[in-house]
Length: 334
Image 1 (cartoon, rainbow, N blue to C red):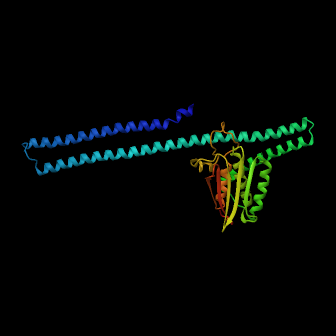
Image 2: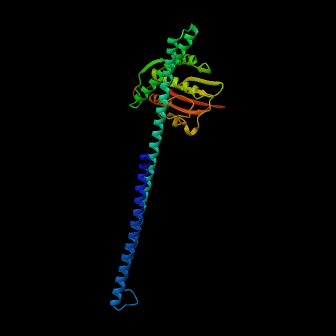
């Protein structure tokens, strides 16, 4: 409640300053008019003392012109100071308003992150705990043991990925350090696809890539890029028949990678935002999907560290396409 009152304080101060300036400007205009009138009266008084000649003398005309010029300069000065003050005040209000909105946005993102991370940590821990309690309290046959063990392993892998994402996002803040090595990216992708198919039996996966693409890059980083894009394509796909297409090819000194899905897609206005840290569409308490808003942020930062680029386009007839271009040889100084 205290915060709700304090957030309006800068605007109240600005309003007071504006009203004070308006009053100050009125007083200045009034004083300028008074001085102009007094000086004109002085000229008229001198003329009366000199016999009130019908035609102004040269000296009187010069004095009157000086008074008139000074009067108009004073008015222009007041107008100029008023314009500068009002412009400064408007800029100040705009900066305060922008900072206020950023603070609210950051607070909402932090709230959403805390809600999501609580759920993301609690859910796999609860599942693993339930599996262990079932092992202890019941006599299970081999198929039941295998099923529970597989579920617990999936949840433990999910928990491991979450912790790794949190640690990696913290490292990225100081700049992602590339560990350059030469390896077959096609073999790495094959392994990722095999693991993905085991945990996503409901996804129809189509792949198209060359058998041997040698790269000099960060193997862990490439693993994270490919895994996160595939997981993201499955997570945000609510179609009855989920489809994901993966294509990878080499052209000159670049690797071109595409991950496409048939989900609901991403609005063009939101495509830059999804690469921001903790950014997720919608409110945490109404969102159906799991996650922390770190996956695409990490992907973007690792791609950038490799000297590559990533963009989002619409898939046809529906869905999203992530298009990546990565150099075959990444610089260690990237």
